Amino acid sequence: MKKLIQTLGLGFLILTVFIGFTSCSKDDDPSDNDLFIGKYEGTISFDDLNDNDNDVSAAEGTVTVTKVGNSYNFAFGNGIPNLNGVDFEKKDNVLINIGSAGTGLIRIDAGKLTIGYSKDGKAWSADCQRK
Image 1: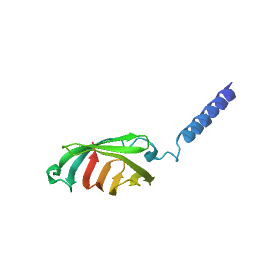
Image 2: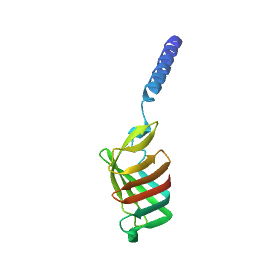
Image 3: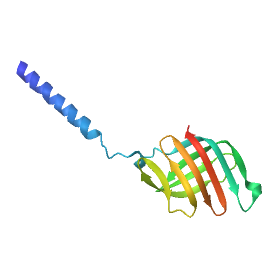
Image 4: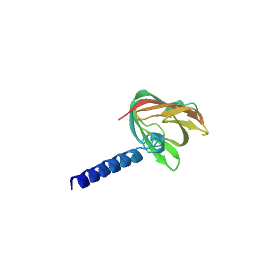
């Protein structure tokens, strides 16, 4: 009876270790998940090179990041127009924009959003931390 209990205990231990190792995948890249979706707070601004009346000076504000299909949308506070339909590629657990009609950089990691991006004569900037 004692040998049976030891064998069952050892079997249970092996099963627990096996399950623990198989559930922890090194292939689980945070940029594959919706980790970057959420609200970021920090300094944001907007320049409309075609109409200076639409400019928004650098001030504290928010940017809300959402994902639609494979593209990301950025909803700015402070009356700044949204920036939509930006495509990204992942590099070292960071998302970096690619192949959009605009120029510049949008970089997102687990806790920080950095934007320096222009498109159609308009320029968005943000230096924000996850809220």
